[in-house]
Image 1 (cartoon, rainbow, N blue to C red):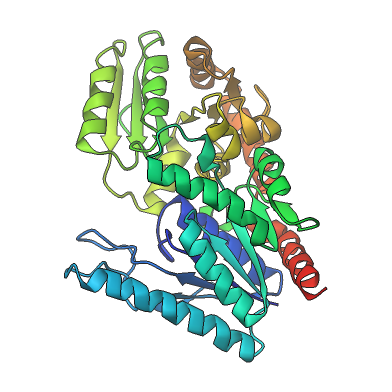
Image 2: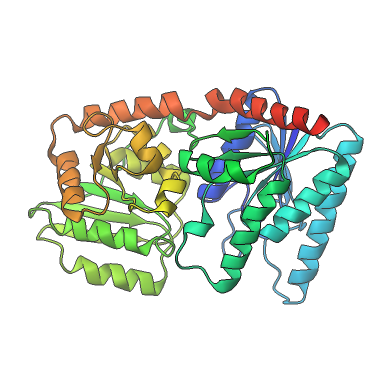
Length: 398
């Protein structure tokens, strides 16, 4: 079996949550005996220090290519749309060539652009292969969309009626996506993906005081981060560092620092808004007193399943979260994590305090790790992905 995974918002092979999910998804296919190729339709590197410099290559048995021909956004403005147009033409031609050589059975689109979905669908249809989508969020639940984004999201939902199947990350998305698909199209509920072997040799970080980590895109989820700071402000005076790691604009950083002024004596906020390499991040997780993921009680949170939770759990350290969506399905309060009712800052503060003070916290962390090994190990999930693709291909051939 040969599968191409295509995305317009992914870096490869290094990047953040989206990249990690696509990389392990592709590796799961390879470990199950399929071949996987990742096609990045757009430039991913926009900073002075790029994470990815190779436009094509192979990593852990997964081949990849930036169909732009380069990873970095061109400096000349006119070169950007020209490069993107060439990228789409190159992708289309590559899909046709792979199909003619009998090296392609299915194309899977990972992204949220209706125009890109339709372009990839057209390439798959021209090649006569199955086409599916990977859905990890429900944009129609977002309240901060522009008018153009709302139109795109509605059209994206309607376009699902043209695909041959869908991979979704949550039960919520099963319920939302299935009615939009053609009758009989397969749906695979695939959770976050974990890579246990990557933790071999990870040494816990040491810092001057005990610390709790929140890793997220603070610009995308500022209210969640503020809620964590406010919950921490309810803690009794203690020696604790709130270590926030992730992208944060100057405006977001100022908002968080303003909230941090209410923290009790001994509790301090540290912001790491620079890029933190994966190995260092795992070391920080492994040395933490608690790992924090506050999810509000809304459809946006019920639809998604933050990839960081798999990494949190693999560290073996206690996770503090809320009983929302997939978190509530996989984890149990006081057994494999410390969970609070959503929307209750006092309850979240109490859950964080339990993680910090409970003499059994390490045991809870280890049981959480066992959940990750059982439910999220990408190698164990490979056969289900192959089975899903097989079902799409069989349906397309009928």
